Image (cartoon, rainbow, N blue to C red; front, side):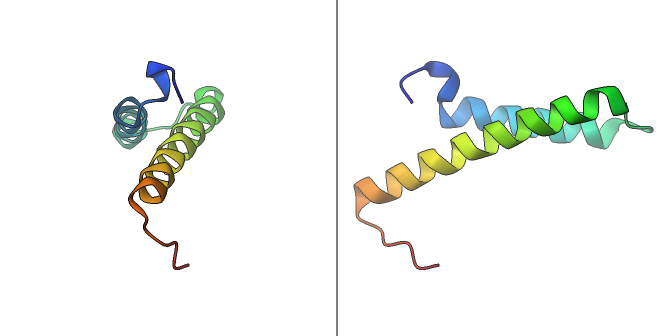
Length: 64
């Protein structure tokens, strides 16, 4: 995750933008829906990986 595009903040902002765009649409654009979901999934996974990395560095245990 050395690239700036993989930063938590940027990925979080992408998720917010996609959610707002989907929420503001009266009728979803099916042609864009798959692309938006794929982008949101990628951003979510990057955020999740960053959180897990920080938890590991801080010594938190995963208690799932």
